[in-house]
Length: 239
Image 1 (cartoon, rainbow, N blue to C red):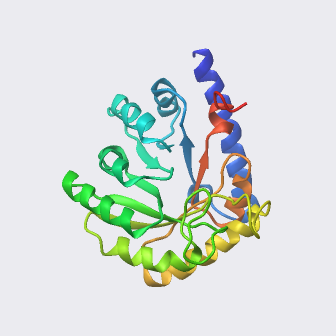
Image 2 (cartoon, helix red, strand yellow):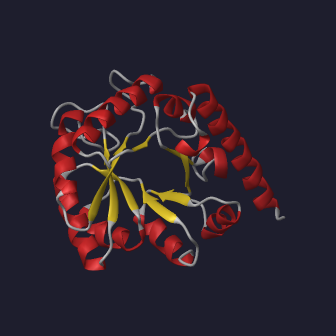
Image 3 (cartoon, rainbow, N blue to C red):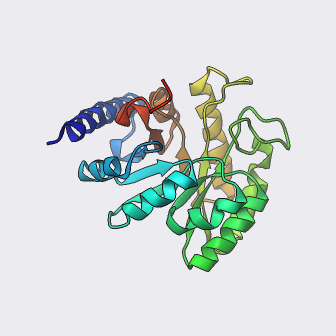
């Protein structure tokens, strides 16, 4: 085993232990929570190692990095998640490799994603990104729609050709009433998810929690956690 593979295997084992412990504490089966490894800034060689170690879900947030990496790993059985703020001029590229876009936060983006998915003749999963720090009608500092805009977007995705409404995503906010209160933020997201499933029963995916707060997300009921640093290490250039 190479040094890098041994390092990633050890990191994955620690993250797996954290998820399993959080599930046990919450009285949830371990298989209710899917680990998505955020591979941004790391090379395709790491993605290949992660696949060898059993990872099947990976995430990226910048198309210029993700597109060549996905192409290099096209032979692997992976589900690619796009988790960054997405400009409409990048939609066609992202739709060519992403299986799920977790950062849907405006109707114009829904329209662009639908057109691209139809052109590619594929179905694209969509999560509505909820900004818990956004006022009515605004977007969050890190993207996302204000809570009162969820249903309008959900209806737009649900009726758009080529798109599938999978559920909700959030990033724990750095400002506003939920700043520093990750568990409360994720509990709130679960309330929105319950409401969403009333009109869209299949939209049961809840993506929340990262390296520092995945336990809070699992306790709240998240179905997917997005973990980067705890698996891959501190990102280059980020200290």
